[in-house]
Length: 350
Image (cartoon, rainbow, N blue to C red; front, side, top):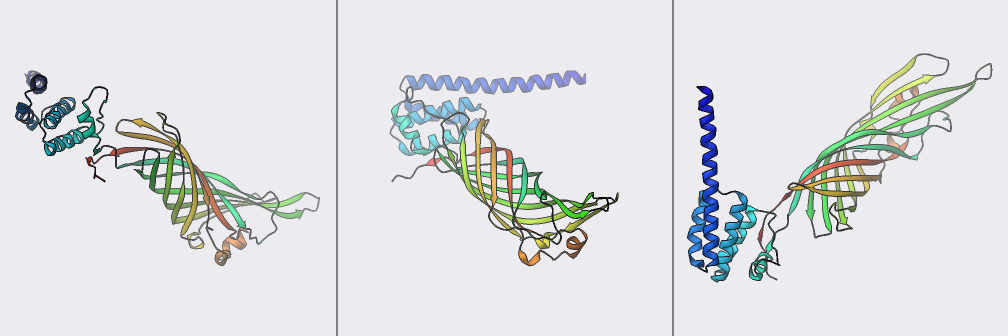
């Protein structure tokens, strides 16, 4: 019996939905017939009563609103025509005219409205490889020539906003959690042993920095293709949230490993500024775009200063790692999805 009740309920809902759709479709056919016969003054009451019910699917609602707009145009009621066109655009943000089919008066009215998105908003996720670029090397020991800073991988994520300026240019902004990691491979020459074997100390350091990043850029679409290729340039301003350095010190002839972790945030400047270059594509999906991008950030300011290079005495003398002055650069690959946000309105006459 319970199954029978459920079946009856679903049947009732389906029949009700079909009846509503059928009613709207019938009204649309009637309105089209009345329009074709030129009885335009009858359309307002018929169409508005149907639309007030709120049971039309979008396609039927748009068709009814279009007929009503045309009726107002030919009845020379411009204010009502404007209001009806606005409702049509609010119903279907992607509605577009067809000049080959639509009356010229309708196309002209459509062109007096803002129909493009005013901005796009979405989320971004990606990975990056970062590296310290030493501007002034500081040492407390004699380093071997093959000591170096290496790239390491980390994540980034956050929000993104596009503000289209025209068909080619877009102002783009983001607020990101950006993690930057890099590796320090430092070798200390200790001479040779009594039997002539070269001796060395090795230190592997892994610094992890967490930043709140605000990149601002201008994007330029250089080809009118479906995938919307673009290049971009701008600047990123970062605020440091935390920075930790994990070090492993190895000594030739000794099996033990000296390992320690240091909080080095106090030795880092809280603000970092980088130049930004990027290239990407935007693929239209649903009500927005999937964006794939490759981005390079080149550090313009030093991440630390000469005043703090010897602040961490344990790191300087026990690990042999004072703080060289460096900038940081990153190469990132990201994916994001942004949705279009519309606010159609009548354009101001100039």
